[in-house]
Image 1: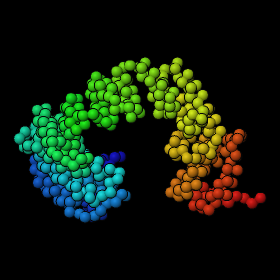
Image 2 (image 1 turned 90 degrees about the horizontal axis):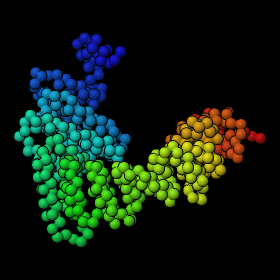
Image 3 (image 1 turned 90 degrees about the vertical axis):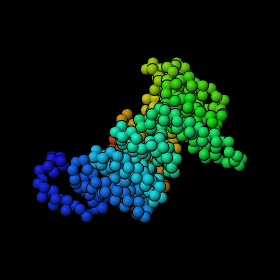
Image 4 (image 1 turned 60 degrees about the horizontal axis):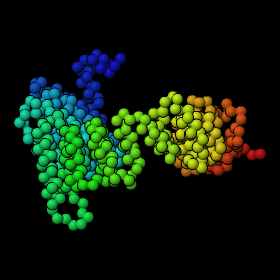
Length: 470
């Protein structure tokens, strides 16, 4: 039975007793209860109590001085998100204009919030970006009901200009549902005038022109809203008549997004790409694919792989290769050697090309060379070799994982190390021949000799930390 069904069976006195039992135990839960109680007060077309409650909760956050460290940032973001959601889900259906004002008040908390939180993971920033999207959505509704309720163009420009922490970066780019094309064009013209004025103002040599850059970002944001390639190009060329490769990449990517293959080709032909061939070839391959030039794309991918064998050059080529072409490509991968590619990269390519037996051979040839491979890669390989019923290759992977973990003394991962240890014990039961590898007992004896002092690890394995006496 669902929570809704169980709650529906309670009488009103039962629900009141439930609220009394819960209320006062956790401040964030109290805030949620207060919102819902306020939302149920007064006639359906009045939201005075709810507005008052939400305003008070916003004010409480604004007046606090507690700092939220890295571990507390997620909880703080959840608190903010709950309040933002209440404005949208509880208040907006009753009073969209009030919801717009309170969403604005919420966005205004950004400067204060970011000074009080370590937002390394971006949780809080994500909530304020959600608030921007929420403001735009509510603003569209309000403008349809009351077109002159705000100076919408000025409001959006004000948001864009007062955006110290970058959470309002997309306010213009996503503003097409709110602002008309003529309003967006007017905004672009204002930004162009600002950019030209800033560029004309004398400055110290080498000083970054913040004002011009800000205005050009504004123009490119309008270009995104209007899906206007010429305007997007103008935003770059005003300050960079000869764009560098990063700027060229953005121009090509925007053209590809619009499906403007001619302009993408134009920017791919610039000489500035000479110093950034990897980025150039990646974008050219995307252009060839969009242009339907499959044969040329395959030829260039094959050339890339032949010149620089690597999984990132092999993968797109393998995806495009036909069933008839893949065996030849597989043989090309199998004929590589560790003189040409690193052993771990060779294994990755062999698995990609469907040659697990050859990959196992590479692993067994020099197993000690794989202890520095990223643990995520080794775990992925182990799973693949398990699917291919190649236990010896699994042994190499799990030994590399365990050896690296213990050599680094990474105590927080000892529980994972114990799992690897037990997987090795399980594999030992199905292996009759370790070939050139030392057998399980020899490997464990070596671990006990080198890492016997790491008692917390051995306790997790439920295995003696010392080798047996002869």
